[in-house]
Length: 180
Image 1: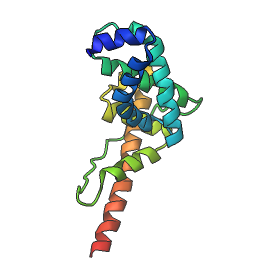
Image 2 (image 1 turned 135 degrees about the vertical axis):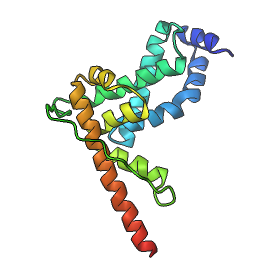
Image 3 (image 1 turned 90 degrees about the horizontal axis):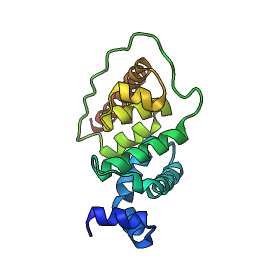
């Protein structure tokens, strides 16, 4: 079935079409929810809420841009709105520190470890890091999405990278020491 026909059937509340859409995209969107959620359970809730919004608004998909991009944006916005709490993002008017270079030894540091340490970042850092480094949003776009200044976005990204660098270096050094 074509995507256009599937979307049309979803606008008609066709349960089979909605199930197919869910099965097709839930894995990717759940991974996305994990990036912006504080826990596995919260990510599951965010995924469910995202699909409810997708099905509720699917008739608004205009065909401009990819459908996957449209549902990705809904999912990110849903997770960010649920995570938004007063005072989550530090507002800073200081110079943004230079972003540290992170050298990762692929033989020592696994992808699972990287995901784990990204999940451990404070929400304000994790959200900006994921939006900028993983999703490719600009600081200007992030500022609008999170209702913060561009400077705060840049600062939070720099601090996230510094924390990640510190964790990676500590981990790599401890692993190298054990191998000696």
